[in-house]
Image 1 (tube, one colour):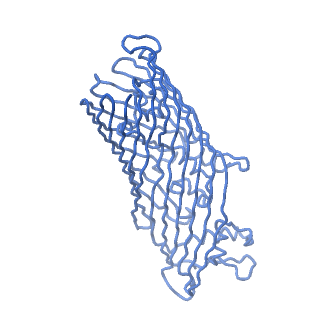
Image 2 (cartoon, rainbow, N blue to C red; image 1 turned 135 degrees about the horizontal axis):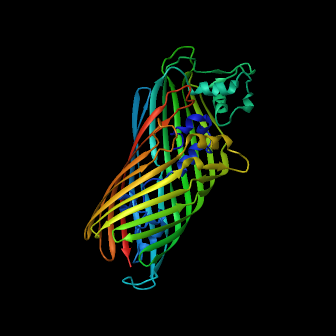
Image 3 (tube, rainbow, N blue to C red; image 1 turned 45 degrees about the vertical axis):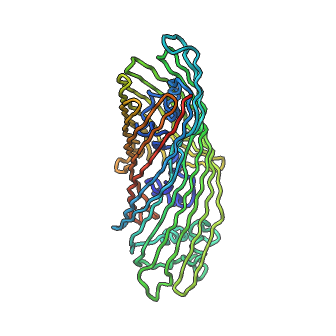
Length: 484
């Protein structure tokens, strides 16, 4: 989420500009999604293969296929967020429909399976897998008599005793407040003041609406050698679509002659688009009929990013005077490198009646980087290095087969990317599912429950208490596939 994170507390500018450490973390993390079978088993397919979404984890899994396949996975996603601020809690939710994946596998048998030796088959695949869902809606409300967002704008204008001319104020922040008379300078000499006096009782409200997703379109090749060693590689073409709209409002509770202001709203909009590329290679080794081992490496993803943002402030005064001040539209292009991944996997197959599988991913979030031709991003990259660290993602899945039916369950834990253990940045996913598989078709269902916590600051963390947000999502998936 754009500002619902620990890192945003370090820079008030993250409320205004799109390129910051929050972006690097948001686009470096992936969450459990894909086919219903993959999702219901916690995504633990690194040494199993034979599933369309598994190709994005370990492309060697493509070589497990013995038939060609086409599949598609629509889903329904719902997330509920409860935000607690200054002894007040507000709940909100968002519902949306998604495409978890779609694509095809083409299998070319070079010789019959049986007792054949050497290269048995070569497989080709192309398609799409969703890797993250950004949709969310958060509502925050609480009382505050200690300070206001206008205090931040005022301090920035005063500039440590060297007041800035109104023409040199931030056109996306305190200049909007100045143009709306929320901070004013009646004699024109930098003697700024706020329309909200100290100790004024305020109701502070904010809604944050996020939309968008991350996904990967790919092409992959894989081969089966001796029905023992499976090798594969893929080229991923990644995309990011993210949009955030936030509405921050302050309402004056106590009315008196010294306060001319009733309320004001700060509206912020940010749109981010990104296109990236990466490579993945992997292998699976069938040590025995009941034990499989897998390994995969994902290169860093190189993204070309583009941000567009604009802000506005609306103010309502008790005289009936209303003002509105709008910023220009900001645009900026930059580059983002998200971390590489190393994945190790182990699976136990019990006479084709049951499967127990586990994956462990190692990701160094501190290696994410922002760059551009015109900006060094020195401070943002320093925050990434100083506050994030390598961590592991654990995936466990099980399947019980009662041919032609299967029952599945899984657990997925994304490790905490923060060095500070007091910040809970991990995510837990619990999943369940079932399916039916015949020679020419299959139909799978999955239900994934995900929970995670986040922290948001309405403005400067040294002034205002944190907003603690508890999030829980429910994702219902269905995969329909045909074999040919």
